[in-house]
Length: 278
Image 1 (tube, rainbow, N blue to C red):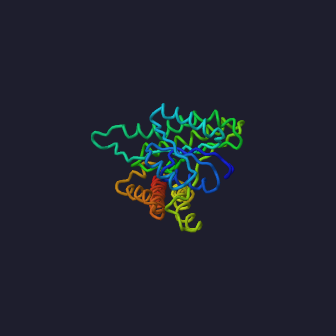
Image 2 (cartoon, helix red, strand yellow; image 1 turned 90 degrees about the vertical axis):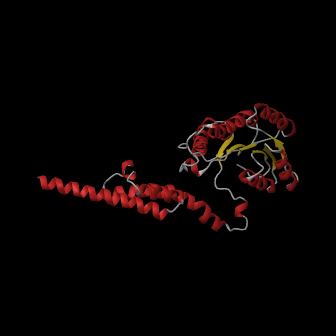
Image 3 (cartoon, rainbow, N blue to C red; image 1 turned 60 degrees about the vertical axis):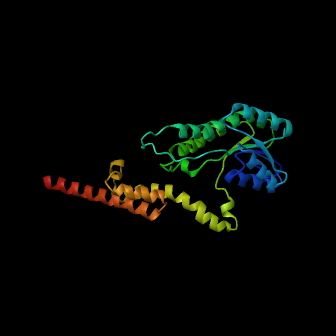
């Protein structure tokens, strides 16, 4: 994807990652249109960046999307980049009395159906434009979910899978399909790239690596496979989950190796018993 000379539409562009993207692309000389539900936030964003264009969009309202398509088509027919960034996240306790699926439904409507509807609405235009691209905001939680955000993490896993399919189906059409990687947001202002990379990019990536390498190392060392029933040992499993949530990689690896040592000990005892019977 080229980084300058684009006309870009960013959904959910009034805060967070969406706003950071809008500002970054605007600073590079792109024409940027942002959308949001609240007109006050749109006004605030556009006032802070002269030249930034704000348009209202409610992804829960099909009529709102229809109006947006018409307005963008009339004012910005050269649109060539869509960034589907709008999304919501909410904690859910499915074990609580009276738990309802309303939060999950809202997340699905915005994070999944919202992306699909926006893409379907603008894809016909993007197919005709040079240097066209579709981007969607995913998350590492698509691969290592937080259990207190079940629907949100599942929505990001869906997007990852769906984008792979979309990219494959558009492989003969000059439209790039991308997932957003690590984004430098307002929290990172003033930090050198080395600090951002080590503290904010590599650290989140370590958990899935350690979680994979731990059981793999156990298998290599002991010749055994750590199965889910082992992780269900009373009390000990809590330490693994706690370490995963807090990204305490030493604790995760330590608990995993402890399981491996226990499995190896049980295997050795079983072998000794077999020899005793022989």
